[in-house]
Figure 1 (cartoon, rainbow, N blue to C red):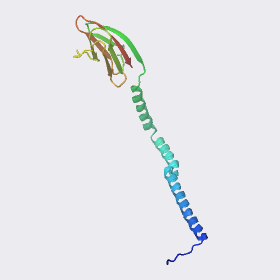
Figure 2 (tube, rainbow, N blue to C red):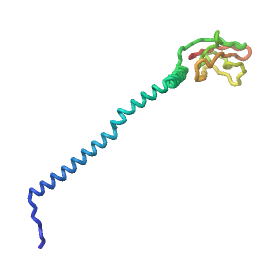
Figure 3 (cartoon, helix red, strand yellow):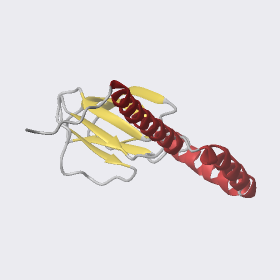
Figure 4 (cartoon, one colour):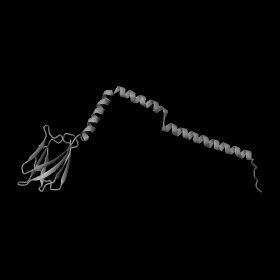
Length: 167
């Protein structure tokens, strides 16, 4: 015969209450730890102070760096778009402006019936023409890099090109 210890209900409830209390206390500690490490109060008050102090020490350097960033960003975005239609013959045709074209990029489309040769900034007879119906995208990735465009057809031929340019 086995020996079975008699336990009163009061003891069971007390043990359950202690277990639940320990569990709730553990969950509360875990919650507080998570909250503390995800939003440390020292960083919230200390970091703005450090940033403000560094900004006051390095105003000139920061302003200079921000101006450099501004120049780099504005040089990548178009300030003006130009569309034109140009008739090209068998003599070299140069497109340029008073101070150069000042373009960053352009797309040229041959809408005529003859091939056309293209050179940018310096005339060198290209080996491959732009055939009728073809288009070429040229992008120098910086504002004002394209100063001149040279166009020419083969002897006795002419064509028309459309140019869409970004300054």
